[in-house]
Length: 357
Image (tube, rainbow, N blue to C red; front, side):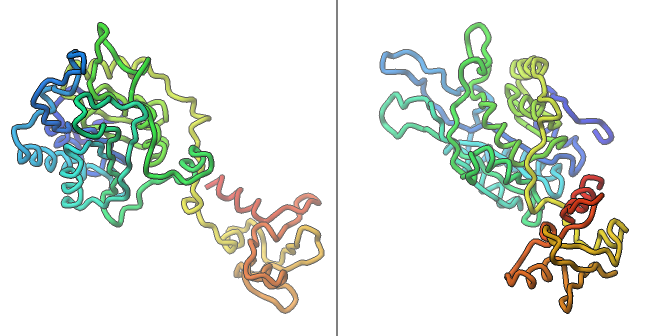
């Protein structure tokens, strides 16, 4: 597949075979919803003896834990290879498989960042009354390596959560209602994930135009949300029925207008521009007078980007702090320059440089 464009495509094929064809370091993010190996032995029934539509598909069945582990290591190894060096992976599972998957993730050299609990607001009841109701699934978020500079849109997640830090327990409903894909009144896919879950994941850990892989695409939720959020997607699905449903779903999906896809930038991800850079680039010249907002205190800019006020010399921050008798001060907002007769914070020059870079 070297040289081929993988952007915004889904294919009907076997994941292990298709993953091997993809060049190294292709994807920014992987979301994987692999078979859970639920090990269901008997049919589930409700108290009225009616049948429960549980997950008993062939694709979820493995003859032993050893076979499941071999499968897990195989696809995870390929995902690690095709992730970019600063990429990350999400894997979702239940108690049936997530601990085995987590062990594989660590053994393969990924670096686990969080485990996230998806608390289902409307879980399926425990009809037999022999165990606690399974009301959550676990997600593992891991970077490709310990040194990866992975994406985390902290400010956007905080805004999404009413200006509170987003925690690792997420209360979201299961896929239901009009979102649930059905054919002839029956669910197209037994474990269709809600778009809200993928919206949060992609918003948190990817950026606009990133390339996102889902190696077990299912009904196409990852690709659908990626398309809406301006991310590029590539999906692999083995089952023809699911692939066809995902294909139609994507055709019916409209992306959000580009003007509304900007996210809040993390402070640490903003480019750091020293005041001296403005001097070097000739944006503000040595000898220029800068002053406080009341024009009562002034300083001269030196050739090395330092400033001088009376007998005090140093950075824009240090000199301002000394004048105020404070431990620290933001010189970008304290100092002003003259722009057409108006006192304008020197931060205006920095922001202009950032927007043009």
